[in-house]
Length: 166
Image (cartoon, rainbow, N blue to C red):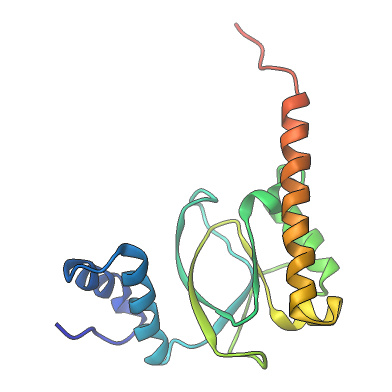
């Protein structure tokens, strides 16, 4: 069965592809690609707002090729438990506006469809290049930041006293 074009049909197209035997991740990628080709090619950068958990990838968006998606737990760790504060600090560091921004494409590459989670943040490739000189170096630095913040957060959580019992 042919897939329907447009963003409003992404869920239906995912179901169609899964019914045809495609694995879930492949079905999602195909449906997002069909939506992008139908004119949904704008890209997202900034903090991804929402009320679902930070490990629930359920927001189909396009990001610029070369963008870096900062996991929700890292933003929370940077903000001492507050993802918004963590994004604000990282946004200042990379010269980005703290609120979410939406753009219509960018110079680095085609929009790349992804499925993201609430509480994550997308750093556009231009900001990474501006800060680090090139994408490879920037991604290496950001990967190291993710590892460092996770290690620091785990160490901090282990040092906290246990909850009081009634």
